Image (tube, rainbow, N blue to C red; front, side, top):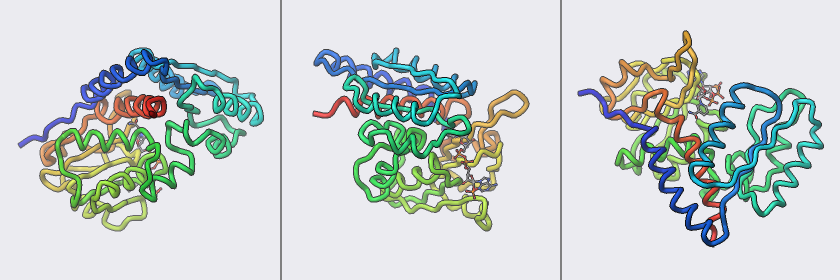
Length: 280
Ligand code: NDP
């Protein structure tokens, strides 16, 4: 039987509409959430992401500020902007769009963001809190992955979760999140031996490798929930890290690319921003 297709676009729209209700309430109490997005240089993909984030803010009613800076800006000037945003009461979330142009020190910039406004969840304080099980900002893509799995109605506790990929922005935090949900988690990477057999153990398989259609039908346990984070451009088309046409015949549920994890990333960014403003 073909898998259930997990419609990330629809779920993200539902989350945005739930958030809009919260924002309307907050605004009526004089606490409208605010997000500042900092874009340095002219990376076209970054500019597209920033536009999408601004549009989502407008739809939900979040106040948004865009700071576009030339790639010639100095590290000191960029840090001064972060300081200014840290101190601004209108701003609840700060997002510095990565990657930064060469010559700027990303780590220092991320470390400068007030961890309480770090809606991307990349500050070491939030990374550390997540790993010791304290409430923390969770990076938006893995947060979206977890939300998609939850909304399929799948029980996570006690399940075997295999995460393919160990990046700091997707793989590692995804593994931590599923561990927090009491799953038994395996993390695979480029040095894993028999990666296909490892993947085939997963009741839930999260794939974030950046390799077009790497995961085939025989890598997947029958009935598994498969979440494809990959975004790869092949012959002018966007494809995931999972061979969708093969895997959908084996999995119990699967996300498409596009229309799966992608829309969830921005929805979770909006949620993180609203959460900061909605502290009693
Ligand atoms: P990275 O390149 O940072 O990490 C890739 C990971 O995959 C690494 O851990 C690497 O292992 C592992 N890997 C690579 N090739 C193989 C292989 N053949 N077998 C096993 N493991 C392998 O990528 P990201 O995590 O940043 O992104 C992954 C994908 O997700 C990309 O397609 C990206 O575009 C997409 N993405 C999508 C987002 C969304 O909103 N939907 C957001 C962020 C990313 P090792 O560590 O050993 O090198």
